[in-house]
Length: 232
Figure 1 (cartoon, rainbow, N blue to C red):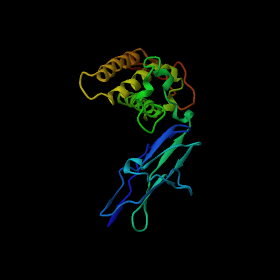
Figure 2: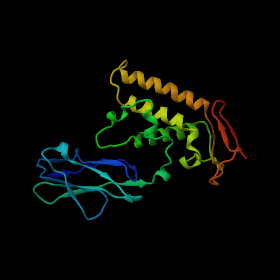
Figure 3: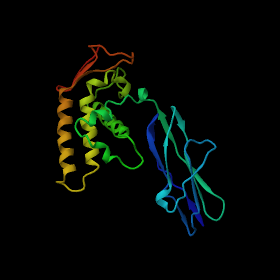
Figure 4: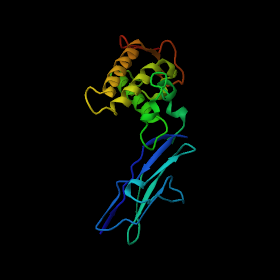
């Protein structure tokens, strides 16, 4: 017989944010699972999440400090338990340097939080995806640092200059994940925010730290309406 623990989790989490360590896809071949435990950080404490069904096999958690942690799930049947570990990088908000925040969303969608998925209390993960897509866009357009390497979030010294772009892109991603019919209201909202995101990007003119000095000058800026980079 065989036991197959499965643990799903976010790879990056911000300090103080709620995240879910999900073991609901764990299974055993030819045996009955009698106990499921989750360890959130690689420490000594295991939480029993067995519950009444596999739907209960998860642990919602908040990390209090930046670290590389090793959560694990331990599954028991009739014999010895079997465990598997994963990895989570916990970072501060300063390191995350997200370009928008949940408070930016509510001005456009006051009830946006009713769309939060289970196991989350914020949309920080979606803001992080929007940030990634913005950095991907810069990379595709060959807007690189002084060594011709891909820019990191830290290169955006003043996030206010990309806040509108990130805000609408985040809303677009949220509603794209919700719609299930081509013309339903979520589809319409995703199209609306995609257009607003493109407009915000076209208007953007931001200074970037292209030389890694920690600051950005007027000679280190990108004009998105013309895709022109001015370097010092």
